[in-house]
Length: 143
Image (cartoon, rainbow, N blue to C red):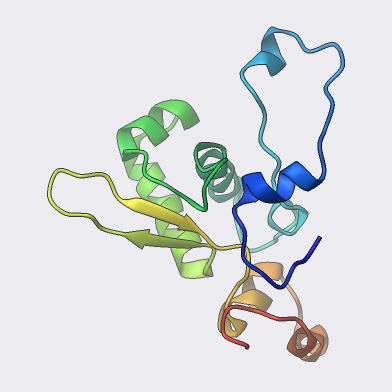
């Protein structure tokens, strides 16, 4: 698998298939894989992580999705105000880019798995001693 090229998540997963044995009503609707760095981040709260996971479930075949905030709120079991708070937090951490499409249209949410240098130490929860090691990791802002 080549990690130097940006590919839709659906294409990446075709390289590594998962076989579900004993699928039942709970697994029939599908499932979502969430990156471990996100699950273990000390700078995102549980709501931020669940919001990212829900967006990831919508964007399964693409690198973006465009659910309305009402749909997000219903699916997450939250009030729309809380959804907006979590979206802003993900955007501030560099994990989410929000593209506004105009009045009455849903936003496009781009999920960022490669963070900008300025965002990655904060999001990954690394202390200052470990930050120089990040210079060896390719990100969106490095060629």
